[in-house]
Length: 204
Ligand code: GLN
Image (cartoon, rainbow, N blue to C red; front, side):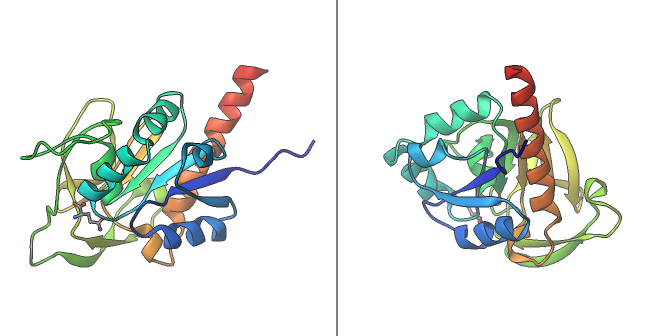
């Protein structure tokens, strides 16, 4: 029996939305921009892209999306935050009272790699993606300052975690959508397929 393919949403309030949508489509899934709760109901996984975290937290409140996203994630929907997205899903932001969605047990430091390195492309060893280093594009990127026991570090730059996962939530400090390398998108799509299979099993 044919089953419907997975669809992945990209939060489309601000930031590099278009790049993620095309990277997802190139990787073989339906991809939809997400602006409303109705949009959110149509997808099996969500990406929060790069952008400006304080602006996006305000917009999430204004569009009444913060709680519906948190609820879907608590029910098992896979979520991936890139750069600003990592900040938005963190428990807290070191040195600030900045509000977050608190969906992963990490504390992050904004703009952590310093002025000299505000933008850089750094080859990263990420065993979960295979032997070939991944081109890490960092743009005023955060790093993970503290990670709880449930958080798995998948990649580091200069001893700081820059790719982490806690169950159905993935975060990268860098921007895979700005490279031609689709391995992190494919990794996330696998998380989405696994969640769908798990859900079907629960229903069956
Ligand atoms: N520095 C930005 C912030 O703190 C994130 C930068 C990015 O997403 N490229 O929101």
